[in-house]
Image (cartoon, rainbow, N blue to C red; front, side, top):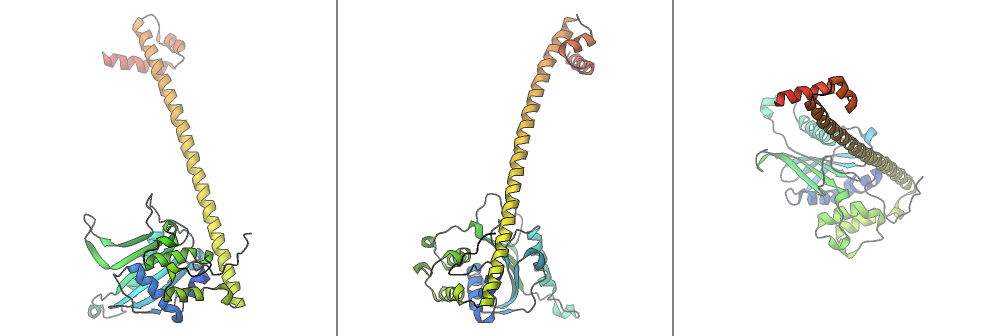
Length: 316
């Protein structure tokens, strides 16, 4: 079993670490700051409320932390922020389901005509830790900001439903390359547990609070135990995912090798058949041998000779 490293700071992408940093009213300024950076000025959150229930999802199966938040900005908005520690099947469909439920839950039980579908804005924010965006191909974007658009041009069709996927595996900036607070947030999310202190690149009040909150030495004994369990769960998930990716890679390489070998064999067979067809055509043109004799001489079936004979006749 992998040994626990007593890092100075906790890994805030673990279940426990994420809840510790972002999951309470006393620390909601950290979550507000992070969310505002993700929206990059498009939305400004002034306050947020943690809904008591976690969003309906298969949390017991996928080992994720899911917050259901009501955010207040220019008008009422609802957010789900989610830490995904393992790659999920049908990730995009799951997020679409979560968003549709948030929309449907706003409908009153009666008098919908008076309500007139006054739906507040809904956004799904997915923090993807350790796995790539499905069907991303060779793209290396670390932020995917998605809305409903017209297919034929870039005009937005509906701006009150959006999805923001943060792909941490593609965020590879070093400290000296951090140019804005979004960079700083993603850097600490990905690297917190390997840092030794607050560098000059992160010297801001919001990050000073974050680092103080994330110190392992300040955790109570029961908190340390919960964190250690959460960290092991994350490592187990990473190990399973890595094993699955390696198996998939080997399977693809084997399939490619077998495909190449099969292609070469087919090519040799086709070349051999073409050569024999030419021999058979010459033997037929000589009018000295019967069909069965030509089949025996060319080491082919009688049917194959008859096929060449028919093609030769058509050629005339």
